Length: 285
Image (cartoon, helix red, strand yellow):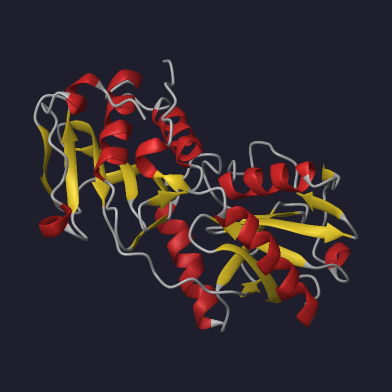
């Protein structure tokens, strides 16, 4: 990956991961990285899995983050692009990490921040909580805009013995989970809710759809309620866990579903490339 001039010539020093593991860092175009705390109001976030220096879909995460940042008055597209290149250059080459990039509203304006976090263990299945009611997010298409609301839903799901709350439209159509896309299989056809103002553009969902299409599967969208999915296998998808079959709350689960999910999980994993080789797209203002 070709880094921004400042990174290549050393004006923007990368983080020292030997001493900064797990920490937050502000980024500034002139001064590079500096220590940060959790202060400020988070407006936009994005995150991805880094496993032994390899990342899946980093270019798409960067584009989604930059596009969302452009909705707010802030550092501008050029500075956001440079920040994302500096982040990519700073990712650790060893271990499992789940970094989070953030656009943060502070008392003096908006700033860009990275939070380098160890990755939680991957879980192979998921239980959905269907008691959340209609989706009440303010800006579903911007990851991070409804952090507090989604955190409260996840806490309610955990209290109910589940892993993830299911979000549905006012008409009861399945949208997604609080941190996951939702898809289902009708025979050999991969299905999911249609894109629109109520759905976050899912990176892992897009990658899986491309893999399925390349393998000869039809990939379609449809409006479906929970009863519509009673007899089909349902998966949740995200960058951290990849594919997880739903065992409770939606669809139907059989032992063969887990084996099928692991086969597709291996195909997803094969898409990972060294972080330094991932192209970071330029998003124009």
